[in-house]
Amino acid sequence: MNFSKKIIDWYKNNHRKLPWRETKNPYYILVSEFMLQKTKVSKTIKYYLDFVKKFPDLEKLAHAEEQEVLKKWEGLGYYARARYLHLFAKQLVKKKPSGFFPTTYKELIKYKGIGPYTGAAVASICFDEVIPALDGNAYRVFSRYLGIYHNITSFGAKNIFRFSILKIMDHNDPGIFNQAIMDLGSTLCTPRKAKCLSCPVKYSCFSFKNGTVYDLPVKNIIKKPVTHRFFYYVFIWDKKNNHLCIQKRNNKDIWKGLYDFPLIESEKNLSISEIRDKIWTKFRIISDSIIYQIIHKLTHQTLSIQFLNCRIIQNIQKEKYFDNFFFIPHEKIVEYPFPRPITLFLEHEKMI
Image (cartoon, rainbow, N blue to C red):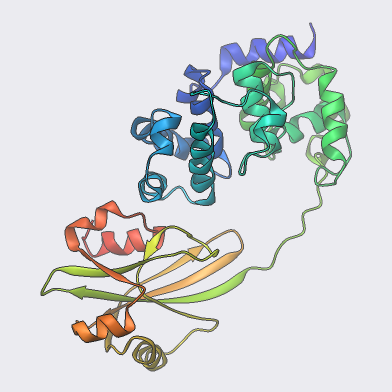
């Protein structure tokens, strides 16, 4: 019995039951693949179900406002994925004929946000294109099974792996084959504590036979230094009108397109007197106490965040110092997408 048959037979009996596996609709598969980038399956399921309920097809997504899209993505992180998915929908809806969807790997990867893995996954699952979908799981499975010692982060690794995999890949059902590899890598052929004895192809696996399971894959990852940033949020609640002051983040930094409060940022930790001075200088308002603090860790950044309560400002100050901000009714705050630290603060204050 050959490799692909054993893998597919194992998958049919042991595959994870996931909502996006109940369809071959390319839009649904693409949504799931975008969400699964850098996010665990267990966390993705609820977001996926809520997202496709709100935007059941490309047209609905294309005609939605960015704020709506990001609100449905709120808490999932890596928000560029949502913006690229939204852009993809808008680009396709403009094309003719209606309902057009790229059907090949080469066509798919022309769109922003669709990389080699996502393009291969969609092309194979939805359109039966014979192409390996290579993510971390796949590299680990094949480097161990085939005994490939090439550095998986090197420039030429993809072609070496692809050439070797095509020899053993199922050409009749490439989508099931790729999903079987995904599940094998996620559940059995794991980075640590691999369950080799349960593997359907253990007796033909190079690493199992040679005791090199934990020597592979070979990868040379250069760790980026972690940047420490200090955020001081100015929380202004105009209780007379029951309005809150927020802004939309439009720069290319983290959380682009999301909303937050007026902000003082520093490269060092500031004392309370330094914070108050900077808030006064920038906004001409008086800050009171620190009402909430949180450490928020991102891939290469650590954010030390404090929220400061500030006194109600006069209308003249709003016009002069808050030109880039706007005030929303308290009850409307649930309609805006915020970064995780802001939602935690709002929950703490029982505002959402």
